[in-house]
Structures are given as structure tokens and as C-alpha cells.
Image (cartoon, rainbow, N blue to C red; front, side):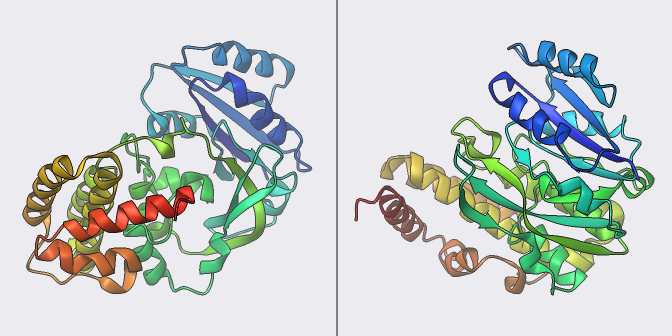
Length: 325
């Protein structure tokens, strides 16, 4: 069984070596590595070409900058393996990742990931296998609200599943995996989990996940709503879409509280609440069961346009993180 590994690359010359070496060093050998240079301005493309010259399993692809979702979509066009795996260019995978994946048969296989320091010591475990007892319906809905993390790197999918259903990432700079994750699980007939930290990621200040966006999930939540309408399944998931809209608004208020003065927060926060009121569908309830506890706790404040407690809670959380209280 051949496995396709897709790595989107953007200005990753400093980290690309350890990523590629972790794939070359797999105990399982039947793989292809598709390195997609997303218009890098450093020497990433030269490094990619160098790797391809040394190993004919490595496929170099270059495109104009379009973001991580676009780069992954481009890579999927080249995939010929039975499974498609995504790895970010500043991360690494365990030596037995592909070997263990090759023994699976499910349409979707979820991967346990862990945050590590530069010495690869595990700082935090984010194990998808903790959700292995959830029903498909609960899993889908919790993924829709972000209560279960999306992350293209957190799952491997049958290439046929992706191509037959034309499943793609969106081109959002943050959350481009949300609709992809929804569609993968919606169309999957089976799913399984690989236990143990097989994927290691390094949390860098400049990484995509740390982008300082004041409303990182706003556009994605509306895009997911449009997707369900287009598929004719909106009524089935409307309550969970509402929960995602609530969560997106809370996340935005939390971001604003962390980066704005109180005066600026009140101004921007009130505008974000007005937008939330325009977006929420009053014909359907809010699916509290499948949203995060934090969003559920903050919902009454959002509903009654009381946003100061979100500011206070965010600032207290920030102080705790810095160890000042």
C-alpha cells in the first residue's frame, strides 16, 4: 500500500530538513512525499529540488502563494497513494507512523498529536484517540464547533474518499481545515484511531495557528453554514451551526480582549456582537451539547450584549499564563 504524504511549504527553510528527514526515516518505505512550495521567499524551493534529486519518491511542486489550504489542495492533485497524510513543514512524525497507518482499513484514521519543545520533550498531549468512543454524529457536531480540533494533520484519509467527493480545504488563512474535516467525516463510512504521539508539532510564534487575527473563526463559521445549505442538509445541522456562530463570536471577543484597550474592546466588541445577531438563526436552538464549556458559559453574556465579563475573564487568563498571579 502506497501512502501519499503532502507537506505545504512556505518560508520553511530553517525547519524543512527535520520534517523531511522524519518522513525519509520511516520504517515503512512505500510512500510518496509531495512537497508543495507555496511561493516561498527564502530558499525553500531550492531545498525541495535538492531532496527530489536524491530520492525519486519525493515530488517537488511549486505554486504562487495561496495559503496552506491552497497548497494542500494542489498536493492532493498529485496524490496516488491509498491514504493521504498531511504534515506541516515545521513538524515531524514518529518513525512508525506510516507503518501503523498501513495496517488500517478505515476511511479516516485519526492521529494523536503532541506539542514538543526543541528537544522533542512532550509538553502537551492532544490525543484524538480520547474521542474514540464517540458516535459519528457526536464526533461530527463537536468537530463543527471546534470542540474537537480540526487539523488536517490530525487525520489520514483514503485518497479515493477525498477525490470521489471532491473534498478540499478552503482558502481561509485560519480554520481552512474546518469544512475539510466536516466533509471527511460526513462521507466516511468508517473511522479509527492510532494511539500514541505519532505526530509532533513545534509551537512557534510565527506559525499559522498563532496568527493574530481578531476574528479567526468568523468567516469559517459562515462558510460552513453555506456548505450545509449547498448540500441540502442545513436543517439537520442548523443548531450546531448556531453553536459554531456562538463559539466564533466568543473566540473573537477573547482575541479582542487580549489585544485591545478596554475602550477599543468595547467599541469593536459591540460591533462583533451586532454581527453575531445578524448571523444567528433564530428559527433553531443552539446546540450546547456539542460546543465547548467555555463558549457555553459565555453564551448568556453574548445573548444579552454584556461583553465586559469576557474582557475580564480573558485578562485574568492572560495573567495566569504569564505567571503573574
